[in-house]
Length: 275
Image (cartoon, one colour):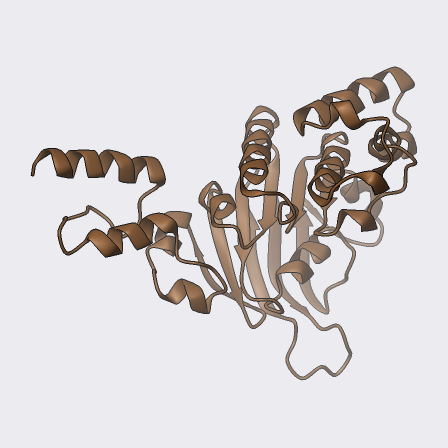
């Protein structure tokens, strides 16, 4: 669905070290890819290049079989929904429902279909009861839900989440990620998530670690989490289950350095039942 081919990008001409340095990767259709790394590692620049907000210095970007160019930029953008970290930067409507409907109006969607899609999107993110409220009067987490609803209402082929769940509380974040997982599976939507949240990373299919404008690693979450202490150097925390396993490893023989919470629970029951 997405392919980066030898992409180099500088924000300023003559910049000594490029923000992205000969970066190549692909994202399969229907895949959930997380991109992690320290601030300044090139994560947000990468997704802005995918959406055509920035233009690479060298290399090619392919979206759904087409090379991204000035001629097809707007056509390709219709396939992409993007949610940024600060939802206030995306609000344009006087009410929540007006804001979610804004892009649909620009796209020429009929009124009947627009009402249906706005209500469905707001229902999905738990904001249907707030549709007549002013966005400015919402909490940070509620604003983020509305921004995500606006992207989902467009039925995009690709959904880009740039720290989009960072303003939600842990429970709300997990609920929203679960909703987006279900939507992705139903519609074969491709998701790219820039995040520092380990729960979000754990639910993705693949995770790319960026460091100094380059791809440090490309793996599945389980392989990344097994790196333990080096995760701190990559801008991530050590997973809770990994810490538990490490603390108990002198007394119990675990099967792996990283397990999901459910796997850890089952393994603990099994190990303790043998004692």
